[in-house]
Image (cartoon, rainbow, N blue to C red; front, side, top):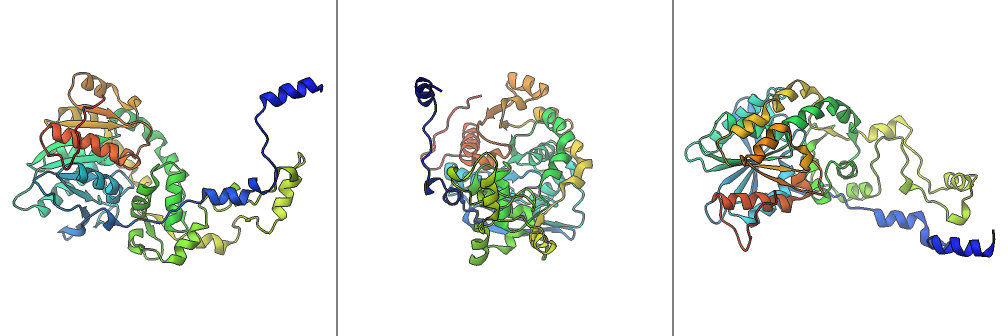
Length: 411
């Protein structure tokens, strides 16, 4: 190669990384260490209560403090597999924007709620549970109720409103659930559930998986919501009952990464050689494997069993027979509700034909929030709170708190 060719290539190529300790994998690893310390419920809610509806049903509820001025109760319904704690950050945001009180419920078979028949997750049963719970909480003077539901919780919110189980329901917001797209997704739901890990070594490891898998993109929200989705395999109690964690458990979890399976090796765990020590024949990889710092995969049964400390609170695969009932006819029921209606989506492509026609006719307000996943209210709690607060203020259901300004919807 001529010197001219070398000069041209050097001008087009990016500068080389200098050799030495600057590019060592251990320093790169330290820069990527994240804090997955779980959060506590009382950082976001004023109180929690186990409400006994009857001998067969007891539901865990979380509430924010009562507003300084009169305002509605926001009834918040979580999605399948989640818990009431999924609304933690949203509650903090919305109560700063408007005068309201948030009421978050662990639905049947989820969180810390306890019922005799946890496998009965039909839409009618879940809706009746909510109606009976509200009647128990407010036996005489029921306040104005505005229901907000995410995913499965959004479908149940529509069924609940359609059944007219309480007299003071004033409106509804459904978050990222549409009949058409939901019915299409059911075909691959079992495959998705099988792809998830069955066990977690610790609560921080579960939070790490939640973030790395993309289930939730907001790590602060995952720290609060994920403990409400898993149980301790020994005590069979919700992971929130193990909080706060001892310092030694946090320290161990801080240096232990959660992988898709116990036999995989993290590239971050390898203390790699510098670029000068690795050639095309792979001798650098051999040297790394021989290094004392190289972390070998878990291979013994004892070590594998030690990682089975936590598992999912609910086996969603067993609820398959109810999936069609949750979403079938959902769009028509939503449009036919004689209430102010709002739909929040993570993508404009989520609308089905029925809702597209309804939206063109102005039968509900729609808002699309970009740069977020399915758990819209967890990924972007501030923006979701702004949209819902603005909607409540425009309909004169609530008053602004502080200097919150109501913005017109973009869609």
